[in-house]
Length: 62
Image 1 (cartoon, rainbow, N blue to C red):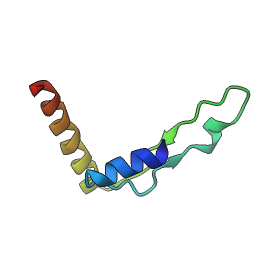
Image 2 (image 1 turned 30 degrees about the horizontal axis):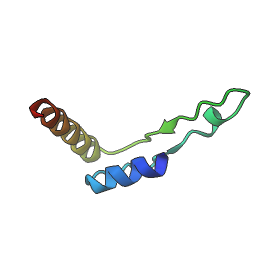
Image 3 (image 1 turned 180 degrees about the horizontal axis):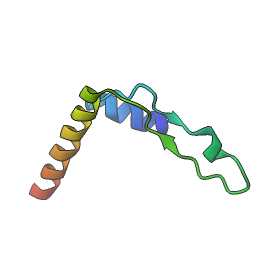
């Protein structure tokens, strides 16, 4: 899933530099893997915000 998310974000022009799987969430008797979206700069955060808002508006028009 992490790779699919990374690929989809890159196709949309967004790169999260430290996108990864949180190793601690994969341990224990009932592992619940979490994807760590990591740290990003302001330009990336702005681009992701714009992308999400555009998608929200597109969804309303359907």
